[in-house]
Picture 1: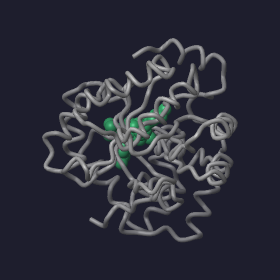
Picture 2: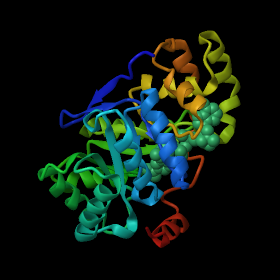
Picture 3: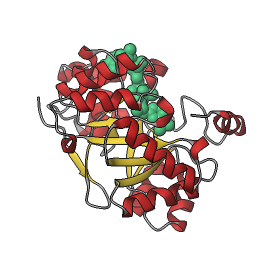
Length: 284
Ligand SMILES: NC(=O)c1ccc[n+]([C@@H]2O[C@H](COP(=O)([O-])OP(=O)(O)OC[C@H]3O[C@@H](n4cnc5c(N)ncnc54)[C@H](OP(=O)(O)O)[C@@H]3O)[C@@H](O)[C@H]2O)c1
């Protein structure tokens, strides 16, 4: 297997360009098994969150894996119900305990709701204390992101956004580039929505390289410099999703995929008041 490339974050920390996500893997046995298999296959970036309720399973898999902790790039997130300086600090402490580790590679403010400035200040403090190697945000669309950058001490190292072939975040990427924040894609397959796995353009392009539509969709992201964290609980798909480092999409194919951009979410609009209402009601 060709090696996964890394990207240097704005504080000099190296982050793998591809990793493994565990959203919606709520069965802890399944989550532990999936992370165990992912590490054995070569994934080194793991993406969890307090909200996913599976940090303990991720921690167990890391602990029993022969892969040294320092070779793993471990990300978790602080949920909205833990917003604010004190609660966020306690949330990270709980995550450390759940994950059975004494440091985290990346901690993100999960959503730009509640007292997220307080949350971010807690992360800055933990960064200074050496508990977190890099700090960032998630779901901060350009307006929230720029406002944060203008009012905090540490520019976020990462902003994790819904990003896939149908929503390529071209505008957000320009803002992130301006201030030096790495984009990370969540939902790199649009969770299979929009017929991504059978999309004719992706399928046709894949045939030229003996790759699946899924592999083309992922390769497009990493080749564009976007960190991608696909989720699957199936070992064959984990291997398939990792086999994207032995080919390169031509400029023509990249342009064809760029043309698939619909410039809008395939899920829910994070600026929709009903969405904000619902998210504020979800507790961990
Ligand atoms: N920050 C945020 O707010 C946020 C939001 C959403 C997600 N995330 C992060 O991003 C990660 C990835 O996003 P996601 O889990 O929402 O969705 P995703 O990775 O876009 O898609 C996952 C879906 O694709 C299927 N799949 C995976 N590989 C496949 C393949 N090669 N062929 C066919 N089907 C395949 C999976 O099914 P099976 O599992 O059955 O194989 C699952 O149904 C999450 O796990 C999480 O870590 C973050």
